[in-house]
Image 1: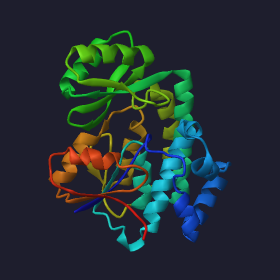
Image 2: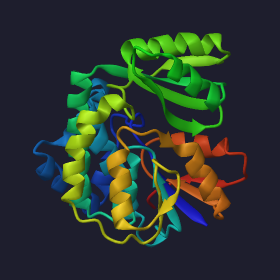
Image 3: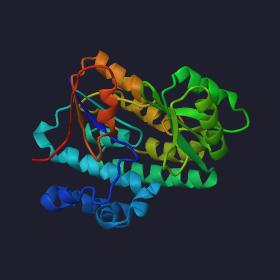
Image 4: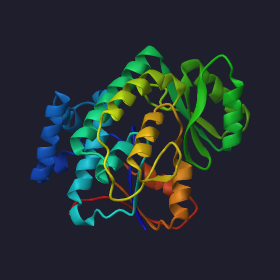
Length: 295
């Protein structure tokens, strides 16, 4: 069983997608369509901008989405997934690639999500930190013990690696307490805010309206969604999970476990970076891992 998986924020780099644009008429057409839909030339920022420009949430998210989705479209007949999944933002790339969402609708939702998240970050400043080498229960207990600030376990990436998210003070306090509790490392992440935490509630409300007004089709294969880690095919359930996703944890450890339990043997990562392959390597099972490439 083959899974195609799609990365989230953090995988961006200057020059991403440029080779696709220059070597394929289809890719060029889709990138130009994206420039029109977004109302600015995102390709200029992706290909020649600064790392600082690309790091803004409202740019990063559509940039990674476009790189992933256009690359998937260019795989043509070799894109034959038995299952798909995407990490956070990557879930939208996965839904376009398995035909649940149209390209244009997916891009509009990603742009709306990114703008809503950026606004929520400005309203409720927050951050995230990766906690290495401590079990989930201990991390959850420490977060729950911090009463006057917001901080929760937000990304279960693999065993021994959990990301916490919340207010600036909440995350700082959690890092200190988690190191005291035995975490090997607590690494602050270069992100614009407290993603997948209750501080994203204003963005969730805004995005919910956009998702509800978008047509979701039956995809060509199940998607394993972040909110539950389970395989889903029903467009209505996919919608509901996607709305919950902004304020709920990303259950990637559970996603990998469920994919493996359902017969996964090969994983192809579609988009910038190799972060997801690295997480699958730690899943404790021999899998064939690769990055999608265009001949």
